[in-house]
Length: 626
Image 1: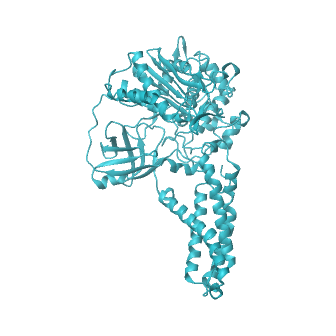
Image 2 (image 1 turned 60 degrees about the horizontal axis):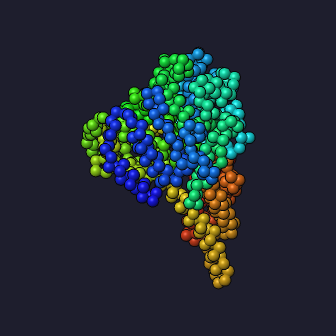
Image 3 (image 1 turned 90 degrees about the vertical axis):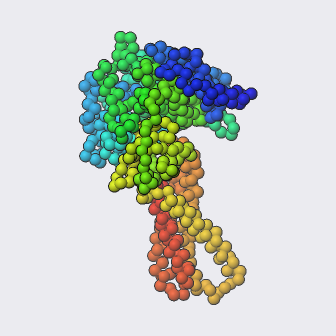
């Protein structure tokens, strides 16, 4: 019956008028009906235990509602007024508001070298220093750093003066050039707040933001204080055809993603942001400071949403939308305010199946109540050779360069090809869209005004930018990141390993039985075969130990399994055996009794195994890079 009801809703949803309330929300009953259908449908499709939504309008809570369960086993339903969800990176807004407070009072300068406020030094890799402005706009030029971003136990959460010097990402590009979302960049800003004020961030946020706003169901403390612990929703993951209750996710950099809050408190927070950070007679910031916070810092290309001072620009349909999203493994949330319409919406899901869903709810909300009033942008015609300049593989610049997560960059490759005068984009999840040119470097989606743009270098695209991704740039893949290259190395390695470890012993046993003594002199000598066999075994063991650990995925963010650590050490003996093979190859090549086929095979094996070890090194899977 439930599936029938969902099917009926979907039919009715798509038969409804597209713009029943053009220009904004006016009827809370109609809004609830719409959101009920959208959220419950997603919950059914994605196997989500519980969700919550709150909508504010004109300074009032227009709608708040809970869906499903905060505790499945105990049958405790989600209560929007009290049930707390982990809001993850929405926590960053509290950090940026704190920074702006300090800037307003003159304690910090957004454009000074941030090293002046720290007790450790960010390396001077580039001439331009990292500043608070670059941190707020996610443009400090840091690589991605995921290892130990989460912790399993409270005792595993190191203090900030240990986390940052030990885990600080490398600087891989000059600041204020390209945005690349950075958790650790926000962590640096949190530490600046702590250093300047002399108190912990959770204490500062409570005294200066949470308390004054009356957000009694919000905290940065981990674990939660006893008075709030019973209100926290459990987190869930799908597995074995059911929902499984998961562990509490500790986030050591609290100002980066450690907050827990209720939908009602998020409604208070949204109204506070919509009223120029004021509530009653209390203002967190003066109007000039708040306006400054909403200003753009970096715009990747004309028509793209800008990277602002902390706010994520989610603007769409010619409507300004700012806020922030947030995701842990189990909780997925979004907070968005529409200043022109004095409206805000907060949505959160408490299960792993909610990944990406909160953003889709916002998308449907915006399409229904704030549709694009503009006609579709006019297009131009580009010749096939002009379109070819944009084709290729692109991946996010938000990626690791120096640790074992580097290979994860290949999980998010977007492919661009041409099709009948258009660009064809295939996203990592397989979604395919088509884009029409509106000028020489900008394209719009075939059925909407959503845009992408390209940065050119020597008449070829080097970067792609997406209108709705202001904190990410997409680099065109070249040289050593080439997927075909790495797939070829893996395949040749596996073939060589199989032949040496399986076929060679089989042939040896066969020869023992038939004793072809006259041909023995034409074979590779034992002091070449044995190191080849040992080298193949070491590389095989490395693959076997590393691959399952990568399959574990999320666990790597917390810690590296012992098996993976062992697998990362195996290439060292493999390298020793390979060097021995290379040394003995001189004898093999000069020995006229060994046939040319075996000599060529020896060369191929040396090249393939050298490439395999280089590949492990390239992806930071050799040694102790974690």
